[in-house]
Image (tube, rainbow, N blue to C red; front, side, top):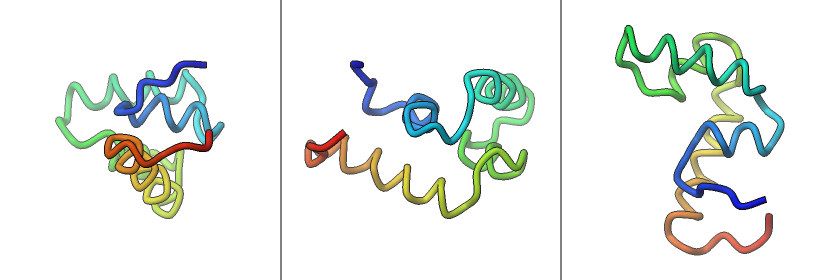
Length: 70
């Protein structure tokens, strides 16, 4: 699976923390409230703040080119 390293939603789905449907719901909500996706996912109780922090750290490592193991 080729993963877009900068997309939070794709990382969360890949880690099986949210479903595609949950991501779509959060993205639809994001259009009306203009909040960051991660914040919305926590507010909607789709992920915990701890899970979000771990995936954001992974996302940062991937962007920096340091993520090797998938």
